Length: 590
Ligand SMILES: [Zn+2]
Image (tube, rainbow, N blue to C red; front, side, top):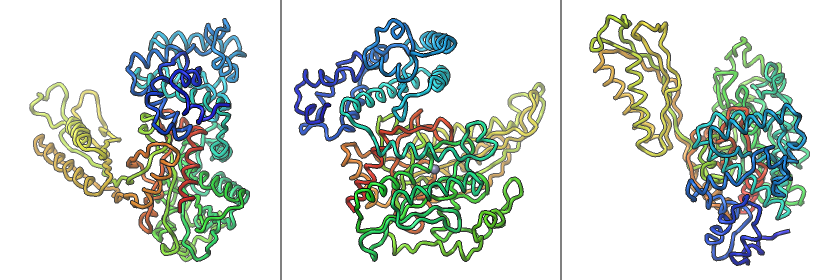
């Protein structure tokens, strides 16, 4: 087995020799990593992995392509001729590629040929997968076919990330390291995903809407696991939150609150929300196993509802904890006419405001709220960073609008006499893109566009659109909002159109508490990783808890370009291991 001390003591040639085979036929990577080795050595295996990835990221495009081309095709000629490196042979065999049926083999050859014709390099996939156990041939072929359609720049970056994942697994093998905490969390998430609502479950899709059978089964499963982990108190509260408490040594000391949601969007991923419940569970499991207690109690909440999929109410679970559960929500009906109050009663919940208001937490009894979540975006992926520290959850403002012009004949109306509502919205969209792009940490999107009763030979007389503006601070959001609305008025004035604009939502930004953000930064730095700070573009339960106590979040990188709210959502066991370790480091320093 190799050790970090060995690597840190090695001279240049010795280090290159030690890392031989980690990056396929590319010793230059180890050589440059040696040059970048800190004076006191790499702080951790994670730090070494990051340094190697950084060398590749900072290399020229030609060097990156050289690295990609140093890899064999999957189930390609080299595999058939048995001329692969020992590492590649092992990986392709583990993935079962050496046992392809003739049809699968033919399909892979066709994909190899199409891929090479399109990109000019071989398809790279870490076939041992996000858990390290090996993807199925079916998964490999699906991924191959999907990535064939990617833009070349995006695909090149995805190949490099897969190369880093291959290197990570090879390094783990050399160091004799198994990410057991990450595996535990990964396996829990996989197991929890077996509960899915009817209509989706049959197709292998994950959907868990509020208080369905699958939702209640997931809650019961989480509660069971919490008991097995060694939590002292476990229960399901009046809105369906799963709450576990691990007592501290000082009963009078305030508790640390943490958690995230276990409901999902329709056809969603396995880690959105759930990661933030499972990571602290793994920490408690370890504390209990070691017979350790912290001074402060730790309270982990699996929030029952965050996504707002079944009812118009969102953050139903976390709202109750901050006393913001709106009584009128109980009278809301879902798409099938099921009234929330009746649904709750049927699920055995009291469905009274007294019981719900009793869930409100007294902020004086808590140190604060922290939340772990997948990033749900591409930033950490692009930076080859497993973890990021959230500086603020974006404030948002949403509108639906309609522009009214004049629907007239597409052939007979001269260009200078038109009142084209769609062209005016197009102008607005380009302005939103330009204005939001001009300052950092502000985003603006027109996600819905519609020409009611539009026709190919009629100038659009009406155009409906949505508008979603977000920023890390309320000031930045309001400035963007004011500019966009002023431009809308100006466009309509100039083009002779009228408009309506209805605000449908406004949420204040939730900046992280500086002290808690600093604790996350120290926890990540303790792993030997750079503490990358970033805003959260998406809303999270922490936004609600922000109304009652200090909060800060930690993001974990998602695979597949960070895609989320999608079955392609994925995390690796190694990243998850680091996430658990960061949580442990934070707890240890409390
Ligand atoms: Zn979420």
